[in-house]
Image 1 (cartoon, rainbow, N blue to C red):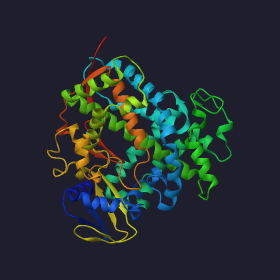
Image 2 (cartoon, rainbow, N blue to C red):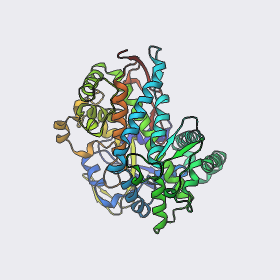
Image 3 (cartoon, one colour):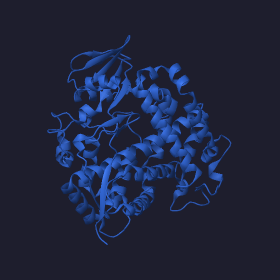
Image 4 (cartoon, rainbow, N blue to C red):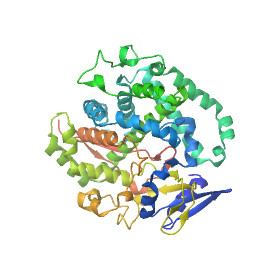
Length: 453
């Protein structure tokens, strides 16, 4: 990791509020839970920190990086898209994804270790596409290939920019990576679904089928899907408002949702299987709870099933604590904020050290130990809710957290009914690389065995 990131992570280990100076610009670093709560829980800290500007070449003014004035208008629409009705309708699709992953993994049965992330990523991409467009994506489709190339370019370039200080200068970055950025725009323009986002297209009146993709519209909906809100509906609604929601905005929102909904879930799910493989006793406890609720057959899981497995939920939360996906978030406040040991001036870029919170021995004793019981209802009730922020905190938290948790529960439970997982990797020896999120340098090596014939 570059020296710049090392300095930031080192500051996160400080228990007191600290400050890093980048030339004339101060950056405050918060590590105390009480200070984090006070800072994030107010509506005065909705502004994202300057660090997020590094990712505007990917996310534009999408939900993750948007100024507050834009975010307030778009968040309301996405709250509806990720609302209960839309999420419940994804249960069948997530069951299908789980069964497809079971079939994909059958070739690895008894063949030694492999990186499970490579098998999960395609499914997560297809799942979030289904949610955004009401679309069935085939892995050989032009849509799929284009999106995977977009995601790869975004991750690779973001990783380079965040870990190299000289690339933080906009003019230098845009000059040195002009070919990459041109390729990025070219891929966006050739995405087949992009034409459905044009202002003159009314999706609800159109049924489009081709070899590349199939859009489910009112004439071809099933199970009450006709009234579900899609990304196209959101774009059309925002265009009718005061927001100038042009192609630049659309691309930014699309990439925001694809990266956070596909890449983030993929890495977290891979971490889940690695954690199961590393802790056989915990794996069996999770497995037996799944069997108690759903049974050994290939019966589809329901929303009620997903909510009836508290130990699986505890396991998933402990995985997100131990394998921190986003180690730092950055915000700014509209006004001065009184912290426990100082006054934070208005408009100071402020870093919240999620990785420090997750590994704080005062909050999580023996923090390197993997222990799902940390998240039993009794233990959670004893903790400040801002001590664990896998989906950020406060008003500007992750809009897709319910979808993410449901995806993890259904797919992990479906696959674990069929296979047991094993690994030679000691998770304490893992090293990480940084970009849009934190990912294992070692990959996610597991081996598997079918549980029954």
